[in-house]
Amino acid sequence: MSTKPAGRKVIITCAVTGSIHTPTMTPYLPITPDQIAADSIAAAEAGAAIVHLHARNPDGSPTPDPNVFMQFLPRIKQASNVVVNITTGGSLGMSIEDRLAAPLRAKPEVCSLNMGSMNFGLFQIVDKIKDWKHPWEKPYLEKTKDSIVSNTFGQIERFLKELGEAHGVRFECECYDVGHLYTLAHFLDRGLIKPPLFVQTIFGILGGIGPHPEDLQHMRRTADRLFGPDYQWSILAAGRHQMSLCTMGAMMGGNVRVGLEDSIYVGKGELAKSNADQVKKIRHVLETLSLEIATPDEARQILKLKGGDKVGF
View 1 (cartoon, rainbow, N blue to C red):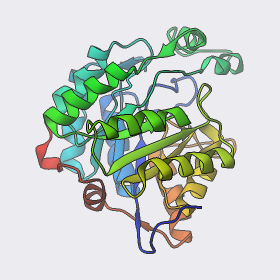
View 2: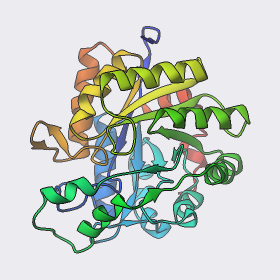
View 3: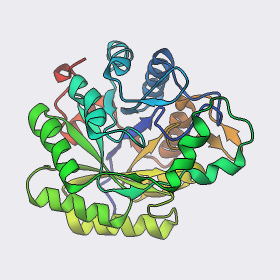
């Protein structure tokens, strides 16, 4: 089992809205720029060093429009020192130009970057819901049965060059399976991405690795073998597995990610009323384990980020 030296600081990332959950699933999902800004600021005040952000249309559907992002990004920066991390994954059906638009406009300190194409199944949720708030929701989830989330080697290289090399953006490298770790090692070997890597291992998405504790341990061992001391590990687990796997990963030397993108619950059968609810809960768990929480500036130092004064918003 991997460990880190005593006294390390744990980075909490909060994924505020995402593009997975829909308004029918929870009334607490941030949708408007006002809601996304407020929830991001509250998550930071609760202990998140990083907020990971998507944008949505007024009906809750995902949008890549940089003008929508710019309605909440400056407000978050004005009110908080939190590190802003913008998606390059977007949502199903978005082109690579769509997915690059907001990051190229905002030039944030961090962007997420999926390390491989994959099946990303959400269709199994449909049978659990009878009445939908908006007509887009059901077909949006159903089409994941026959669609692929595209992140080819060429697409990944384009993100690394156009955001990383051109604008000093660092990456939350999202690894949904063991092969994604090897893809990341390929780009590290080519020098297109440089350490320290920020490796987000993701568990429990249909199409990726499962949420069993042995899956988590296998991803950790593989990353240790591939990257040695040159990476920071973080754990993201979908749905009901969120808190248990984050806790296990933190005990093994990892950082953690929570937020309504990844789970809409704060406990068994209990909807989280805000992103801050989940941040407060995982912070309490970490502090109970005598782990220290990283501030945004400490996260910047750990991940070697360019600084909030060098972004485009």
